Amino acid sequence: MDTNEPKRHSKPKPRSRAAETREVDHLRRQRLARMVELAQSYLGCSKAQLALTLNRDPAKVVPDSGNPKLDMVMGLSDVLDWPAGDVAEALWLDPVDDATEQEPVPEKPFAELNRDAIAAHREGDHKRMRVIAAQMLRLAREPREHGIAANRMYMALDQAGRFAKALEFARMAASVQGLSVGAHLVYLANLANANYAMWNLNEAIALSQGVISEAAIVRESNDVVDLARGIAGYVSGSARRRLISELPERASVLGGDALIHLELATTTLRSLADRRNDSSFVAIANTCVGAAIEVEVLLGMRPPESAIQQLESGVSSIIDPSIHPRGDWLESWGWWAVFGLNLVLRYLGGNDRDRMAAFFSMKGHEIADRQENWAIRERVFTLEHSWHSVDQPQGGQKPCGDWTLDREDVRNLLGTMGRFPWFRQTGWRILSSARLL
Image (tube, rainbow, N blue to C red; front, side):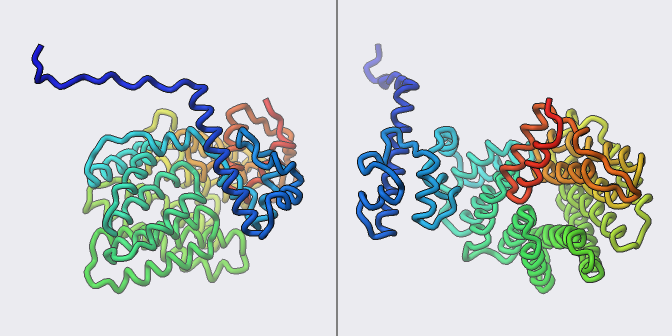
């Protein structure tokens, strides 16, 4: 044997399940003990006084398992003046989530990790993208890298439907100092989009309007500035479209700008697609076209029947979403299904209403399932609830009891309720009235 041969070390034995459980319990207990200390400091009281406030034995305020009961979580929420969800998040150590964050990533330069993150996003692999983005955040050194890493994490969380967390990272990216004008505008446009996803419509409009105004005075137009302009136009027009439905008395004020900005986004994104040879920008432009169709009907600029027919023709091009490539084009047709369902429920009645609503809702769910798109699911579930339970324009009522949900439907419904707080009341109504298989 060659004495110069390097020694070979055996791989460490994996830890047992029991050892991992003990470690997780220990870490959770540490978190709870720390939270109890903070509560004492906040109240300025002793541990015994805090235990009395929490209705706990002073010797058992922190259980050995580190897993507090619900009444203690609610008690800490009252003591700290924190939302109960924030207390639970601070206390809970999710071994799966933490393992994902610490999953080893191949040692690669920042630029290569960024390319991998973009590829993962286009493939719809938000879990892999999140791991890569976490590594990028650890490696980031200069402002440009900090902005890119935070933006990639925003994109991963947005794709996963974790919109509240996505909003945090979008805000982080938009707050990085020392960026180029173009990069800053893109991150502001993404922040506007994150607010749009959370239904913060006025905030989304204000942010996107600011991006459009600032992009218009940039002396040297480039692809990055155009991307920001395109995203902002999409968000501004789409947010105004939603507001028209909520505030029909403001339709004349909102509608004109909605169409102008949707057209701006369509033209800008198509031009950008030609220059970059990237069809994903054309797909987003297609979403803007569909949104403009709905706005034109809401403003009385075109008859609803012809608009619904055009939307149906577009969605019908996706015969079987389960075998269609995932990506921006498929998502675009999913939004066309939502636009069509909006118009059907608003303007049609009788058998035509039921037939077309069934078509658009089925396509919407199928595309959302293929894309794992929670935003489309929320819209389709909400509109289906309206279809099954609200009086029809031409008389009659369709009882919600004839709505049947299978196991997969319930899973998606519960996931939607968790991601959209404003949808939970509708979700409970669906669960209490629909027939469950």
